[in-house]
Image (cartoon, rainbow, N blue to C red; front, side, top):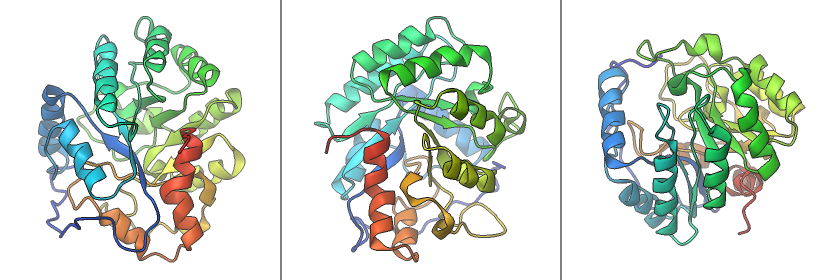
Length: 295
């Protein structure tokens, strides 16, 4: 549960990747135009935690690349109808500035007019997939107007990142994530669209165990690790990645919308019991497969 009582951690940060780690693709980095970024930060300040990194999109991306991250997957989401096209244009312009090292995901507001066409235009402009956020956009994965979005992504071989885990929720969202976000709803999509690659961030938090089971059953499902490995949220037990299917887990930081050092999760991974091969898959190779990267 998001709450302003969650702490701000002034932990030290490294100036480069922790030594000994393989190549790193960060598969979960947020960017927005300045005005929207400011609104996002104000919302987090009031209802969640104080965001530590508060710069422009281009400077934030440069921050990670200059510290050794190989590639950044940039995400944004339309919080209302009618703004997706402008956000997708902004994303395309940002990607062009970084010589192939930034992979931009499109956005669309589920249910808005011409949603399928908006995505087709974004893919034609070079964007690599689509990011949706059920907590913010208040969509049900099984509602009929989601079908055209699934179809166009499957047809164009573009992956979909959907924040459909139940946490972290907030009483200040316009809908209840526990009502619209359930692993069984996503399973219906996985069955109906087997050619559609889907990633659920945060290991599916709060339904971590059901999502761990789903990646065993479905080859078109991936999970990312954003914020779940950092011992930040109050939980009863730490996540044990040793029990996961390691070809379906991707590293993601949730940078810059985090209340602690940018490399906190990378340090956790370095100090974990994962083998070098497992780390290489989690930090680099799995993202190459999910995003169909030719690196």
